View (cartoon, rainbow, N blue to C red):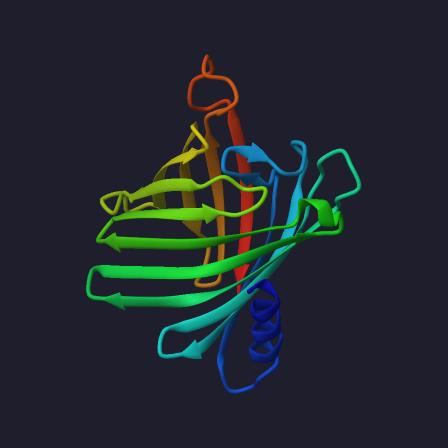
Amino acid sequence: MNKLLVLLAGVFLSIPGFAMTGSYGVSSDYMWRGVSQTDGNPSIWACLDQNIGKGFYVGGCAMNVDFNDDAKVETDLYGGYSVVKDKFNMNLGYAAYRYDDSAKNFEEKYVSVGYGPIKVGKFYGQDLAPDYEWVDLNLPFLNFADVTLHYGDYDGVLDKSVNIEYSLSDSMSIGVLVQSDIRDSDVDLGDAVSLHFTTKF
């Protein structure tokens, strides 16, 4: 399955005429499901997304990581189907995570559904990754920024966060992620804070 995904991503990302979008940015910390992937250090990342048509898409991201071992680069490839109709949205797909330390490689299936400001989803882990269930709540009544509350359950360990995204222009934004330390139940929300800058193209 992951070989097919890699092949499709390579083919469609190289075809002109499809609607390609992308983004890149820098963050003071690469946080993933409540855990730093850069040992608390800054991260640079870039993503490309290709709209194939009729709701189907493929894409990929690359970023630096630091696990205090040989892994220094993470590359994610994904593909799936999404639909948006009025306030309802649905997304399902498959993702492959690749590292320069191949022992860390793993894949996931994912699905999410949303209506209005709320969205719920699940990643079905394979190999090294447990399942991950999550819910996001956007706060549309806050006009000054895009504010999202997040709650997730990763193999029985909870992560809670608030992400605040402020648009500088149609293509640039700055944000702050305030996240609880899911590894220490005695620490309140706010012990993990990261800043990020994003540019879309």
